[in-house]
Amino acid sequence: MVQQKSRRRLETAEDSGAGIGRGCLIWGGVLGVVVGAAFAFYGLKPILKHFYGEKTVAWSTTYTGGGKQLAVTGVTDSGSGGDAACKPGDADPASVTCVAMKVVSNKDWDGLNASDFTLQVADQHDWLKATSIAGHGAEAVHVTANTPSTVVVHFPATVGGASVQPDYLHLTSPRLRFALHD
Image (cartoon, one colour):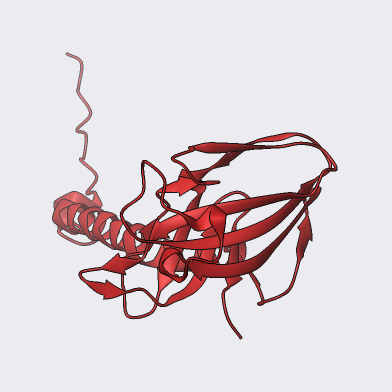
């Protein structure tokens, strides 16, 4: 007769009840996802804006960069009647606020669109979108290389019946914020 050796079973951490259970690992994963999502929605945007945010250009100062020179030359209201380029166009409301800019580029620039501009207004959370650029409902402006151009951007002059007090003009590309007063 052959004698069989008796085998002894080794205890593992699961068998002895010591160590981390599966429930703790699942809760840790769920909490990690919740904290990660909260950081992505609320914490990441301010951090990215800090490093890749807008460059602020002071009033009566010219921005120079990326082969472009941009400067705000004036802010007028169509009600003042002085500037012919500030007359409301077909796509504009009855009364507009106009921001005039001098633009020089070292190469042709076709990408200057009305959708690239927003106006930050005092006491308003939402910024105003441009209604047209260069007047009369135009959606885009072509800037010829090394030729100074004047670009006039139209915005609504009233919000909720009150006239707007513009603080900053925002441009998306390049990311700039132009101060509209001292």
